[in-house]
Length: 460
Image 1 (cartoon, rainbow, N blue to C red):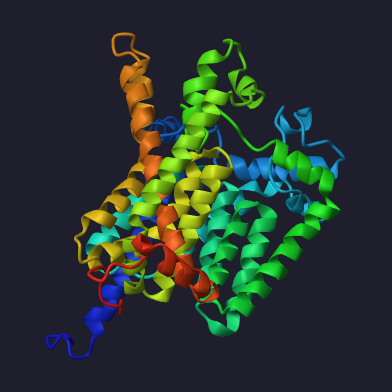
Image 2 (cartoon, helix red, strand yellow; image 1 turned 60 degrees about the vertical axis):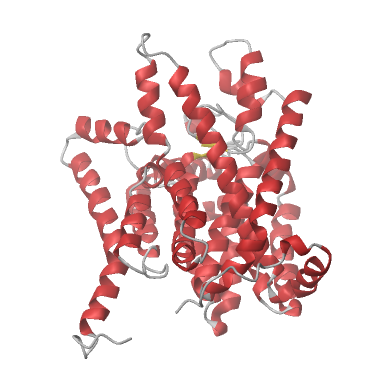
């Protein structure tokens, strides 16, 4: 119904613009203030704030950007960057070999600041492309997520993930424009060439007709396989150096619980526990536990699938696309490897859809409201974890509360992933490309059908 007190609609337009701009502007102001603290010489305050925020800052900002540019410099000089080397200060390269092809360009450590700042600005601008918030409550939720420890971690490091995030958001935006959707799929492939996991975004081709989806899949596969053939040795090395680390630290992934329960207690205490973890395979007990957790995840997803299938039609195509894009990246990364906490920034893409589902679900806000709460928890997890870690250094406090928090954190991550899997499965079963599969499921697995009394009205 139009607002009769504002016949021109000017206030409504201003309100909508404010809801779109406020969270990114707030984040820009906060991160800009931190950058000013560093530039003006208030380094101790700068480090103290980030430490309390939930992570340990390096001596200089944008160190992940610096590490990539350093690797390009060293590769240009003929150094074997895939293994620990003096050129990279004892570190090694852990990204796709495709990025090393940029060694022919005038890129190097001397441009760390402009490149890092550019990536941060690109990340913040990408927030403006997401669907506008429905109301000021959603603005608050997005602001809390955008100022989370995970986001601050990614921004302070200027990690490549913020560039991948911007490419993913831009690619989804392009998919909504019929004449540009092929460019959108190309953007996903480009992101996958830089880092492997964005290849999961090609699952969005299921929204196309079967023939188009097959073409997207075939072309995307050919483009992604080509570097594997051309740089086979480098690709094998890149996959072998995928991070595996301390499961009680700032990493998330399916391996955390099996490693934390069965592998870490069995290690000999040395000065390089991370190296021991890397070289230790899972014992059968850990594999059995991992299989049980995967089965439980499937059970939880199955329990919610019917309701999720009924709820998704309440969203616009844009909300669904961003929700599924964020969900498929996070779930893919969760099972593929251990991930440093900043990769949780991809959950920002899920919030517009989850909030609209909360408002439209006839069964009440709890089903999807709890999902939003879980997203905010895992994005802020480093703040309480670091606090408990500092308290644990006091012998009178001990590590008991810290380990309880770790167990709760891991269970929340598994539950969140199960719910995201259910949403992805709901999208696939009712997508045009997989319509025959959806009909087959409806015919033979009636428990997974859409309940007649669930769902909501179509989103505006």
